[in-house]
Length: 307
Ligand SMILES: [Zn+2]
Ligand SMILES: [Zn+2]
Image 1 (cartoon, helix red, strand yellow):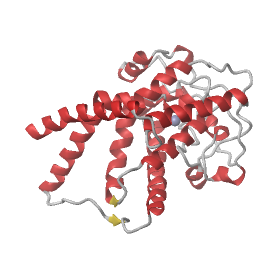
Image 2 (cartoon, rainbow, N blue to C red):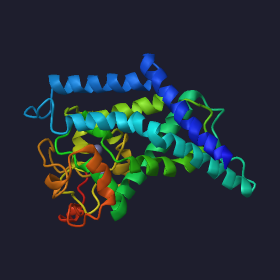
Image 3 (cartoon, protein in one colour):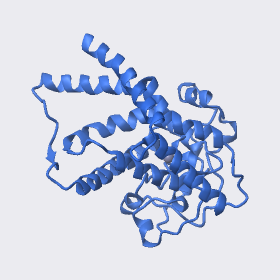
Image 4 (spheres, protein in one colour):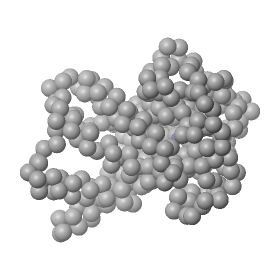
């Protein structure tokens, strides 16, 4: 037990020190400044050449989403997730050891060139996340958490990281075993993480960027806005892609019936959904049957249109 307690305590100090070092030492290998730089980059593009020209530069929810960015990228780890996940990993390994399993690695990719490992990691992780995202829409219980992300009514780059901390726990837990089974030799997933963050900012940005044939591979604002449509095209939604759109094309979950620039976003009673960070965090735990029960079921469209 003492071991777990020590892991718990050191997780806080380790992460605290790490975050302090990040803030104090700007550089190319630094998440904190990459997040700021990427955000400024997309914000600047939104100001210079917006898709919805009538949308305010400081759109509805801008500051809330700005706070979510730092909360979900850093603060949640600082206040608990890092400690909980370190203990979870240790406990899981101890549990496996009871059955004589000391090594989860089933596929050795360590001998591969680094670019091959990074690409594999990016694709495998994105496919897992596509499935988790579908699950968030399928399960009534999980949808309560995911509604935080869908409460965005005016879209912009910062909406990317508006999500409930419960999602972080779900994604990391489900990702853990499959990624642990692939024996990546690379310790630093920095590039993959920054690349995925850039695409996430891009998907949510108020920009119109025709990707040509690349749209069948990469998610983009013209596709992702339909994922946020107030009236979902289907009981459980469509366009679940995180970084890649290819999974939606492969599995027939694409929906882009027309230009989605000005469509209404959110869900039926989104106007009643709380707009403060604390209330949104509490919302999934409240018995809120009347408030925002999945109105996504309100409108059914029989066939998903393939584009
Ligand atoms: Zn969603
Ligand atoms: Zn989104």
